[in-house]
Length: 114
Image 1 (cartoon, rainbow, N blue to C red):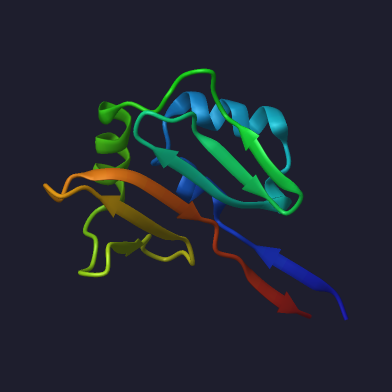
Image 2 (image 1 turned 120 degrees about the vertical axis):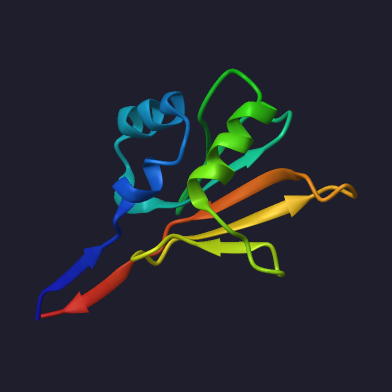
């Protein structure tokens, strides 16, 4: 029996900033990627099975967060959003003014046993 994993990672990458995508491509560890964390004023990170990797030398900006939120769409009351036709889940952290100040973009995968 063969195990096949489908992750639609390209759909998630469509909403991430271009420099983050370039770094993820450079790392080339897509099968081990668990999530991408974008917190305002902090260095963006990728969480892999084996640990975290910094994705930039620069802190995440308000503009980058807003662009990702615009690309994702509507968040539910629990501050989570899914990406249509994928298993990816994005969790938002909001401040007291209800502004998004952090995003955790979890890679969803489908495992098939053929």
